Length: 113
Image (cartoon, rainbow, N blue to C red; front, side, top):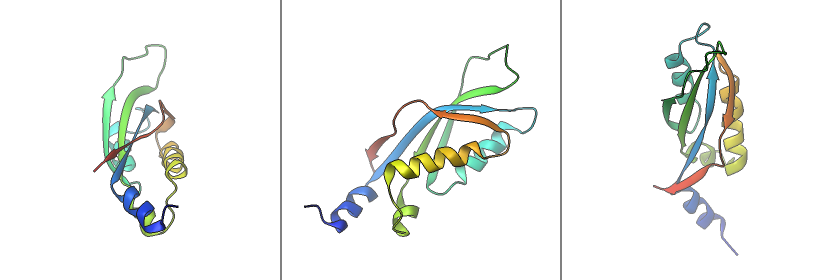
């Protein structure tokens, strides 16, 4: 049986990595501002944007983003559930003004701090 304190200590040592494709409307809002809003989400520590090949048939901009997530803010509130929190962050990204869509490209991974 795993004790709660061991589980919390194990989670504190991990940083979650989430990546996906971000689709934005550059005419509505600057991508730098959108990335800044993503960085302001709880638990998000780093957002790295990688430009993708331009799709000339679309009026929207696409970029691949990599996000590092520190679960501490949720653990502090006793609300940590890895998959649910990552899903919540993905949903919050979709609500940011100027974001047309965000699709995670793979399952999130973890790394030790």
